[in-house]
Length: 366
Image (cartoon, rainbow, N blue to C red; front, side, top):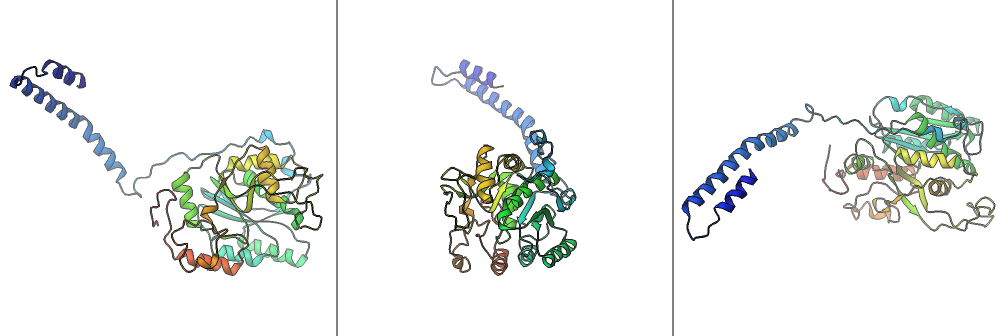
């Protein structure tokens, strides 16, 4: 049709000031073209509009979820019973079916000390409340206090959300807990689209986080996503009296590779596998964040994105309650938030509109 129009334009180019026959023929051709276009194109467009305007409950577009296939052949044959330098590791308390009960958008792994029952309860009653597409699990070692250990087992029987490994839960064993969390995700919850590691003294604006993953990333999963608060240029402390003392024979470099401040981190399963694979090869270092996210991350070629703007870290929390930060897209709280502050933050954000998207800022959603 376009060739015909061009041909007519060439033939009937007006060399004289008036050529009524040529103009009439040209107009007729254009009208015929528009009529044919309307008949062949507009119905198809209207059909598509009608399709997408159907009520959501009657028309769901089903797209096959993105599934990760872990290359387990890259791990040692005894990997399941190995945890960094432990060769007799086992899960002493584990729910093997928690991720098979529903499609899991987000798996939340919360390292917690056995004695921190009140912190776990605060999370269950606030941002870690039950949601069909989100699973929250607490990662523990074994308590050396028999009374505390009995309380943990009672708690586990009630909530069925505690995972334990057979190592003593202690500050110097935190790296075991961190790597065990990755191990659990890989072996027991490969169905999860995204993974959040969050400390038991942190706060998560969970509705906003889930909307971010659905709308700004993908509800069907993704790859190579790694978000956290960046820690760059952190030195390895050589003072033996320091809580974070690192002997030179354990880590000879003066500075750790860029790593994540470990109170929260969001990543996809492929990142989880790379961190885990490399951590299993390394010499044990009890500074867990630098070990997992920095040293293992660098060896695995993993790069994280600083997400500090979307957190309350480095901000004055007192200004949160007076509305100073109301317009900021806050997805995470700050480190070292006790149960009282977690309850307060939960109540504050529960009364605010939930942003659907960081990029689009679409306002309220269901």
